[in-house]
Image (cartoon, rainbow, N blue to C red; front, side, top):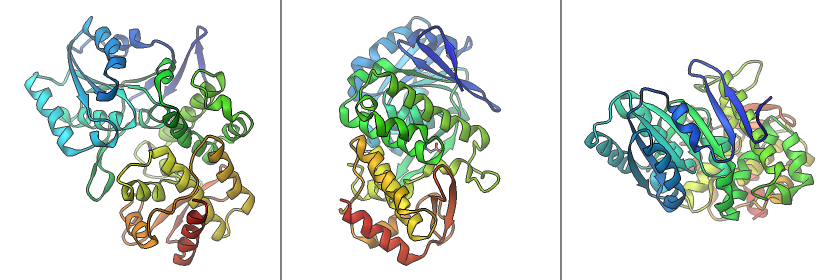
Length: 371
Ligand code: GLY
């Protein structure tokens, strides 16, 4: 699955019409110029404002080759607004950015989503390189070219597919990641265990402390495995048009996300995305059990695996009707019909369209009981 370079770098290749590499290692800033290519003159470094000190070495490395426009973004989901995107477009315009210039993002998933969207939309698309600083951004947001911002109606409702020219995952950046953020990032990793790579679950179940240790070999293995799951999915179905042989295609990555997005929206994004994914995955496992697709043991495996890495598996903070309404604006919905990713067995994902309303309510009650 991997190509090892020297002792410390792993290169995972993403094939397709716009191929690129995801490099995993330490101190990767020296690679930036190679990944950006020879034609770039100006680089906009869009970084999460709260980690400006960490972004400085990246700005310095870029300055050796390019005119650098450094733009600090609001932290977290606050960055993912039309107003912030507009500020970036205005700054690019004022600095004279052309089609041969580029964007580098430095931050978590929200920075990647917003920065990727700015790159996708400026002059209908300029190069972007992602330098994710969180586990969540490394394993999910930075790979696969999905970019987007939120609107009042929900999360990621405006966006574009825009693949990066490269992704540089510097594991050293995880040293300064707060423990709760590292844990939340493992929500997406554990999700990958259920939808595609059960070895991830074995590691988390047997070595939860190592999984939560920023410089452990096992965390690195988990990150690499989760990135590989994502690569395999996006290579087969980049634009989320559907899979083959019953596999849902890219939609599989949204396992647990229908309820997760509803909970995030209801809590005004106070809950971390990975925490909401843990809650949403256990909810959808209950829904699959109630629909006769999986057994109780697999539901309990969900709850135990997410709990092992310190994530919540229940939520009692919103009435059913509100979450039901929020789920209706999920991107997977078609007309008035809700659609969920469910399992029919471990790593056997399928679509459940138009679930029984009583099952939905019963799965909600289970979610409340686990809170
Ligand atoms: N984060 C889900 C996807 O990239 O499709």
